[in-house]
Image 1 (cartoon, rainbow, N blue to C red):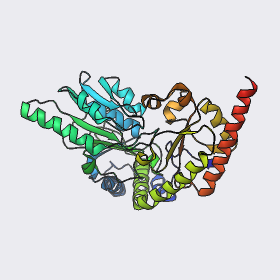
Image 2: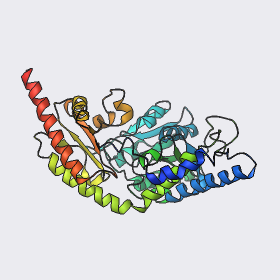
Image 3: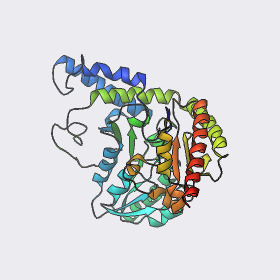
Image 4: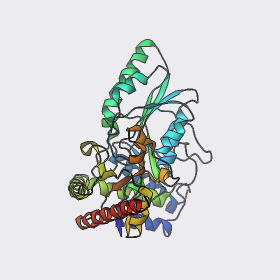
Length: 383
């Protein structure tokens, strides 16, 4: 098997797996109980939260643990009244776009590489805008966005409001799920008020994520009960997954620089191999993409057919974000960067990871070239 869909999910690391196992048996206690073994579990849970928060330059008390990035993103929008304006980039994950549709929203344009247009953001901010949400890196293109530049634009609007005596708040949120573990992510440096992170992208377990909440932000609880997670997410804490998240994110943080260099080298090799295929187009700009991303297109072919053919050969990759691909939808992000229907239909998202080897990419490139050729022959035969 050659797995090339790390943007969708990463395998659970051995360290993360080992860290979580005790909390399924000898440390099974409810962390809200009063007796000593449960108090010890509570202490472990809070330490895990603090460890996760430390990686992004925050404190454990700043985090709300969630079931993943989608829930964290949905929680962000609870701070925004239905009649308020929100701005989101054209390359956001569906969990941002679908929540934005429930408000008065506008889309911030991006260029042909998926890079946000800062002038469009400036032009679309109004005195009624209460939220700007721009991902740290696109889940389909891997394009890393200039969050610090966006933050300065937002700060300028906040200053204007303060001098004008306007009380309308303006929050800046980013979904950092794709970038976490591949680049340094610090909330102060990025200038965000809210930040989404996800264990499933950093070799941690699925079903656990977190939302960093700045001290100036007031969110609305989405469920009620025992008052866990600052009263925003009541319910017994997922201790095993949180402990595993901490182990996974700490492991990834220690090797960011070396892993990024390794992935960049693999991508260069992979790109060179794929460029030998007639008609292959590379999507996005390599210099502004995460090191593990290599989105391509074979215009005129059906990417889903190519994926099924590659699956039969033990190679697994994607047409784009897994959430959209599972519904058979054409990518709004690819349309936003100006690709035509033929190019979108032939688009494949290749993402590498910790287990990807040089031999993997050599073998995968050969198989991709072969299925492209066979599919072209089939189409030619039927006229």
